[in-house]
Length: 279
Image 1 (tube, one colour):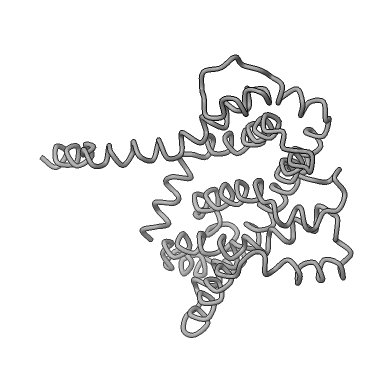
Image 2 (cartoon, one colour):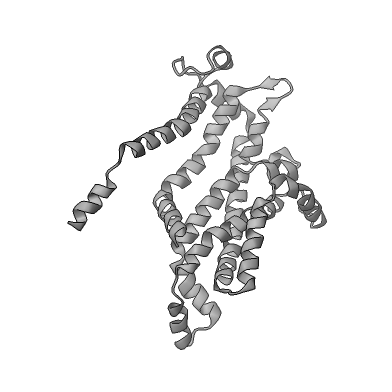
């Protein structure tokens, strides 16, 4: 009886199907338009911008291949994204653990600061970061962008990880303490492995966000040879016009790593977000 009720509850209702169809159209149509435009030449783009029936052309992909900067830009994006993910998650895990295990005013103050930091516009932090990175001689370098992105995504990462820490029973730590384990041993050998689902969720989100980050990259980096893909896309727009085919082709190629990460981490990402929402 219980199994029949659970199966009946899982059946999609008409309204849920309508909602799914709406979301597919909302997110699917721009992606189809993006992919279709990348296979048009410039004449076809202006003659039939919204059409999906046309003679395919590889003009846009040939253009970005001729520029010879895509490989270096992809490498720069990978360095920034991986570095930001490792640093942000590495700092976020002990921060989330310490914040959750705190009590009283420290917990309230810490959560308030994190929420406040999330509300600060990114544009408002450029000048202070520029001065700090300049004092540290990190302007124009990839490590400088990694530090800036870490500062940007760290509050979000802590807020994502904290529910996973809160879902772990304190009795585990008490049992480890009785067995003679100190705080760091308990944290590294027990808490961190049990948080693997939350860590994978936070790491996937930070990687995706840092791969597409544009404002810090274009503001901190001064040498075009160090630009990531997000900044390289903006170079398709110039005073002489916009290469729409090249821009869309570059956007398609630049989206492939994000798509791969999402497909690989899809199940853990979905389960991690749902678990984090209910804990």
